[in-house]
Image 1 (cartoon, helix red, strand yellow):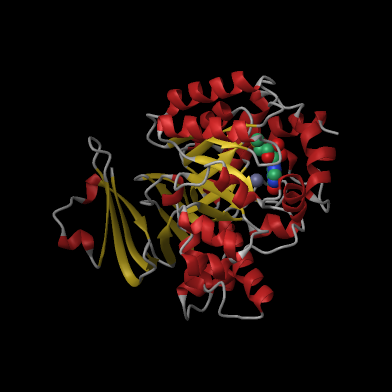
Image 2: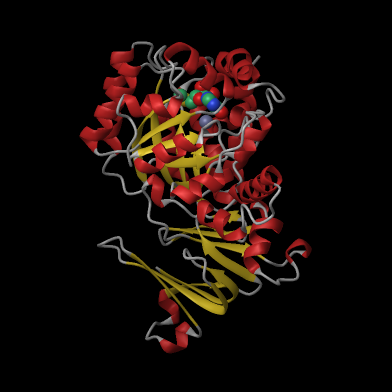
Length: 430
Ligand SMILES: CSC[C@H]1O[C@@H](n2cnc3c(O)ncnc32)[C@H](O)[C@@H]1O
Ligand SMILES: [Zn+2]
């Protein structure tokens, strides 16, 4: 059914244009799956549409914006949220995260992913880019919730809880891609974890798979100083130079973090049109130390977007919050309040294109709250004053998935069941 949002106070579109007192009409052609979005005043009166063929949503005291995109995360780590904070990355992974991840079953990952997908939907995130074990369980949860997922098949040299044999793992990765490649709302991708857990051969084989099936590659890169120094000591190259030397850089590569990189490395990333996901909340929480060089990246024209990283290092999946974190971090870092401006961070938050999804989703923010009044500049209120809890309605690919802050497809009883399952899963953690 077509959807008409009437009498919105404000709307911001994907090009960051602002509209006041406007209607939005969302139409979906069921055959071609094409979505059209029209904005204008009194659309019902001006069109030949019949009220009874429309789902009408009241836009009074609301602001419409495009869907938010969380472009680097590990969704099932909702299960590990709060299990270990205030530790440095390598110790956090080795001592707390990896041992407990070893205890997870596919069913556990499914419930962790369900919880995370619901959290994202509640926060207005309509697409994500994930990398985690049991990726087919993440697909299952994503489809159940209805948002769009770029789901990485994780590759690590020493194997995953599912499979310890690297050749078999790469084989399973191909099977995973073949199984989900035709899905409308799922993009299966190859996800070698990081240069410190994957060898040159592994990266090359991952790239070959990504080329054969024309899918994206997703990896961590230059997240910590330790990672860079270790590589310089071992092979005399920095991580970006190394990935370039083995032919991994290209426009199908999505790299998370890129914190410890030089101006030269920024130029290399730009030259190969690599897409970079900025995760400022996680970088600050894990005290990764450096700051992703936003100004240099923008100057060189690198495609940028935002990610929360996993909910165990953030500790939520809220991209509205991440926008403010990004804006503040770069101002403080450069002693320059013009850096990390409102338009820059909004553009990053709406960038679902770089993970393979056209952004034709609509999110409504509820402006009927003291912290969102008055409105001098709606874009400022979105970046600096709002958070995920202000999301009221979410429309993904022409389907209303959240309305009046309630999930359309998941009732309260089922939600309680998910919380109960999660509570029993975490009993096995140390
Ligand atoms: C191969 S599945 C993902 C793997 O990555 C781990 N992880 C979570 N957060 C980070 C991070 O910030 N840097 C590197 N690795 C991270 C996660 O626990 C899984 O083991
Ligand atoms: Zn990560």
